[in-house]
Length: 178
Image 1 (cartoon, rainbow, N blue to C red):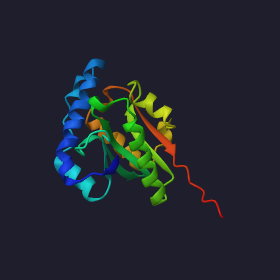
Image 2 (cartoon, rainbow, N blue to C red):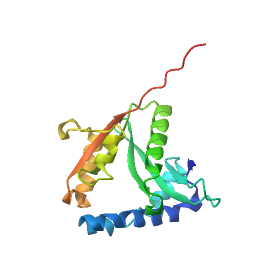
Image 3 (cartoon, rainbow, N blue to C red):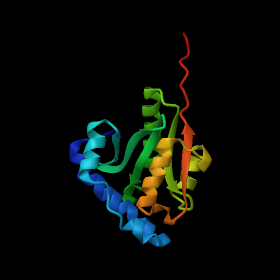
Image 4 (tube, one colour):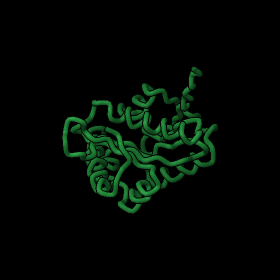
């Protein structure tokens, strides 16, 4: 089940981020693996503004988050700030379902696209998003908001590994007339 994040989920989102980040250690990206999860105050902002979703395991009756998604609006697009899946629930489609939730949210707001920043060579990053319909945005075509996100990532030293900006159009659903 995908639902809006609730206040009670927020510390769990930090746990998910720590667990999901550990996989980067196997790619010699210890700095990413050791990076702190989003601060509770930041998560509270996303949650309070209705820009945070969680996935819960339908097979468990505990309604505990196993994955999460945070969204911003950047350059007129829904920007995926973060999507993470706990390793115990990886490869079950949670990330894809959360991305589709983001597309639904963008569509409801009249936004034309989803955007994100990701590692170019990490299998569960850019190659995965390409399979979901995202394409790389050339640096020269980045809007001012995405350029600001890139500058912030540079300050965080995330660009120690190749990073790309990606975009996916939000497909408008046509309503058939009866």
